[in-house]
Amino acid sequence: MVDLTSSPYAEGPRGPKPRRSFSRANIFLYGTLIVVSVYYLLPLYVMVVTSLKGMPEIRAGNIFSPPLEITFQPWVKAWAQACTGINCDGLSRGFWNSVKILIPSIVLSIAVASVNGYALARWKFKGSEVFFTILIVGAFIPYQTMLYPLVIILREIGLMGDLSGLVLVHTIFGMPILTLLFRNYFASIPEDLHKAARVDGAGFWSIYFRIMLPMSLPIFVVAIILQVTGIWNDFLFGVIYTKPETYPMTVQLNNIVNSVQGVKEYNVNMAATLLTGLVPLVIYFVSGKLFVRGIAAGAVKG
Figure 1 (tube, helix red, strand yellow):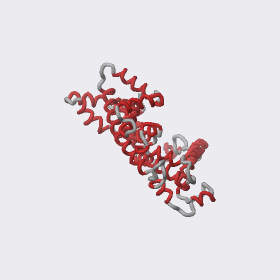
Figure 2: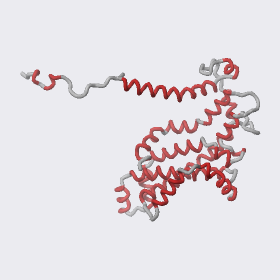
Figure 3: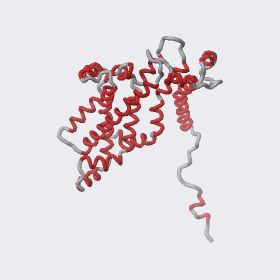
Figure 4: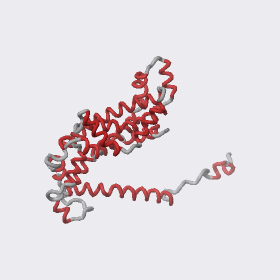
């Protein structure tokens, strides 16, 4: 017979006492998160419900009340009928202008910055640290100080008022921070991989395309999200370096919301605002997990 009273199991469970689910710390933590979430989601809720109401219901009802009769006419008008100055074709023209600005700006800035970061991390050359320091200093210079010099430069090369000029501006201003991100990420990849590839006879471009790129999806997603958010939401560069025919979506949104002619249509304004912010929101929610992975895997490491 086994004497169970002398067994260590007779003393009961050991280890730290399980924490209560509703401790004071948890209540404070989740309470804070709920308050912050409500603070950010409440304006979005108001925008959505207002965009689905007719103007008579908006004038007579509470802004927090859901629509009694849902209508998508404000969305249709914001997209295709609202006046953005002398044109009354809604945000549709500005949307395609923003797409024409966004895609080449992302491709150029990320392609050049990734090669810069790879070279600065793995192919040290004479003066590379000085070059990197100058590049990073450029990221902290207020871009407002460069607005007028860039106007002169774009005018002299014949790109002032053209979408190509705005693409060039976004590419230049995205270069410092993106180079920093790629340089830090590539520096976090084990150097033994680079040395082994060099021993096997691989060169600069072979290592970049065959080793670095396949391992760099998270940081590319980080760069894409940062560029999409910055370029798509830009207003200042768009209104300075383009003209009414090539205004991006944000400039046209400003013309709709701040129009002083006719009746103020709050439902159309809310629908136009939601349409303008839809692209970066969709991209972020689709690739949010990869964004977190890119940050955690070395995007902000020194």
